[in-house]
Amino acid sequence: MATRRLGLIMNGVTGRMGYNQHLVRSIVAIRQAGGVTLANGDRVMPDPILVGRNAAKLEAMARQHDIARWTTDLDAALADPNDEVFFDSATTQLRAGLVGRALDAGKHVYCEKPVAESLQVALALARKAKASGLKHGVVQDKLFLPGLRKLKLLIESGYFGRILSVRGEFGYWVFEGDWGMPAQRPSWNYRKTDGGGIILDMLCHWRYVLDNLFGPVRAVSCLGANHVPERVDEQGETYRADADDAAYATFEIEGGIVAHINSSWCVRVRRDDLVTFQVDGTHGSAVAGLTSCVTQHRVNTPKPVWNPDMPQTIDFFGTWEALPDNLIYENGFKLQWEDFIRHVAEDAPWKFDLLEGAKGVQLAELGLKSWAERRWLDVPELEV
Ligand SMILES: NC(=O)c1ccc[n+]([C@@H]2O[C@H](COP(=O)([O-])OP(=O)(O)OC[C@H]3O[C@@H](n4cnc5c(N)ncnc54)[C@H](O)[C@@H]3O)[C@@H](O)[C@H]2O)c1
Image 1 (tube, protein in one colour):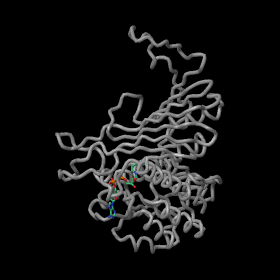
Image 2 (cartoon, helix red, strand yellow):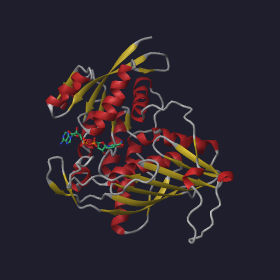
Image 3 (cartoon, protein in one colour):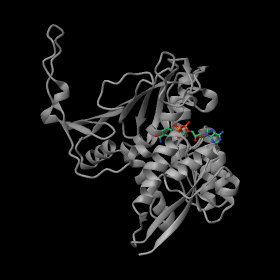
Image 4 (cartoon, protein in one colour):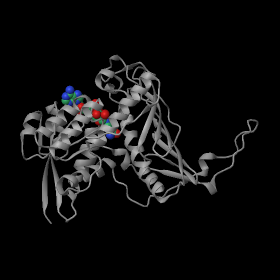
């Protein structure tokens, strides 16, 4: 069995997602496991070159993870024909431009979401990628979460009967930074001018989750909010947090399923996980978190009666049964990286291309428009 090298330009690895999920949990883990195995038994070993602005940080990271190459010169990296793939997880605002340049340089491209800040730019990029004949992809990590994979298993098994509705709750309290507890997310997320805002961030995710689990999203109604208008940044400076930090959105799915998803950085958690999806069907219901999924079949459904004069007698949380961990669930970012590497190396099937990425941006843009115009909006089909 042969091992083949895959030269990989990684931009944005000093960031939170780039470092934790893409470098350490994905590429370093794949290298430690001996590469990605192809259908014919051969292996592909990613050989990354880390790209960024801060030479000292890059050098330290490369040394710590046994990576030979790093540079602050992106142009030179793109000009090297020995590196076939370009990956970007840096700032959203520069993404489409960088991915476009990488396509011009003849690289296959893979990137974080959102692929762009506007649908027009995202679609132009998808068209450019298609015309190039190169491989292209966008991160759609939530589909690889164990909780959502269990939910998909339930859907495919016919467990739900007819699915009626989906209730998503995403969020947790992101500290303001002004009273002794520093914020736990980068400050750019809370500034409009830096590409922040929860609608652009999260509706991209909800598009591929809903499309792939329940059916195509056909319409959206979204109410955004800017609940916490002032925060303190990484340098201890107070700034105007003018981006939307909560979104209350309802979606119509083809076939009649109604989905409602609350996304918020201004909510305290009293539920099973940081995101939960409750699915109610005629034959049963389920609630999926990041890793677990619990079910309640119709034969196990308690029969509450409304009586405000009596304290509640039913332990509702106790009436659900967890799905077993019959499969081994690896890190979702790593699984998707392995799929993309197989797509590049042996043309293995791949769904999550830049058009799918553009669909996420489309839903975010329509969500913002729905909020501004205070009305429902249809979600038109996209074509490249
Ligand atoms: N898939 C997911 O679940 C998920 C979660 C969070 C963020 N993201 C996406 O990942 C991206 C990064 O988010 P993050 O939370 O890691 O942010 P971060 O602020 O931690 O990282 C941003 C990175 O971009 C670099 N950068 C910033 N401005 C730059 C510039 N002008 N030129 C070159 N590099 C620059 C920074 O040095 C850093 O490496 C965003 O596009 C975000 O939407 C995805």
